[in-house]
Length: 162
Ligand code: RP5
Image 1 (cartoon, protein in one colour):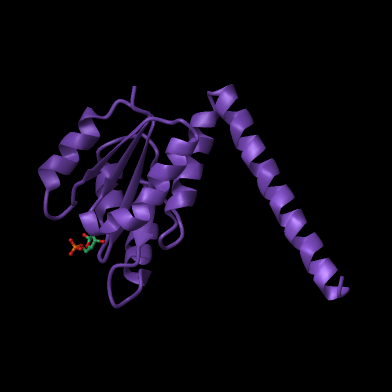
Image 2 (cartoon, rainbow, N blue to C red):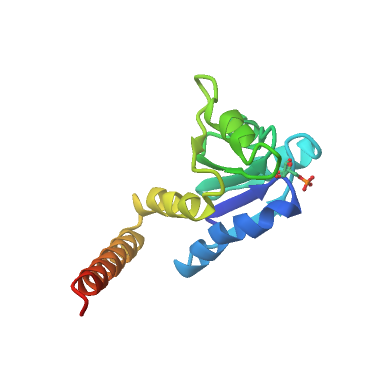
């Protein structure tokens, strides 16, 4: 069964949203990805959300980004949104439109262009009921810790002129 649905408002969003897809692939999590707009294809968006039987939905949209809110209005599954830098406002428009959801219909909002974190957050949600995935996420964090430690050691060496 497809676990995650990725929706984006335009094919121009894919360059960023692909990072979410790549991260899910790295963790072996099945997903579907579709271009569907809250404004330009409202019926298709609603149909994709209603037909989805997986666990959580990642949404990417730029400009007056309503996709996250519209998707969340049609499901009680968790919706994670990525405000995208697509206009002269550099993503601030999409960030505010997405993060300022009125009380009652929540949308978990990531950083502007934060597609990788959207996938990692989705993985955390899936890991609540998947012990194997939880252990893979823990290993991923351990690897990050080691990477940062190695970077610090390199810095210390270069500061000592070694
Ligand atoms: C939004 O408008 C899309 O999510 C995209 O980020 C932005 C621009 O879309 P295009 O004009 O590139 O199709 O709806």
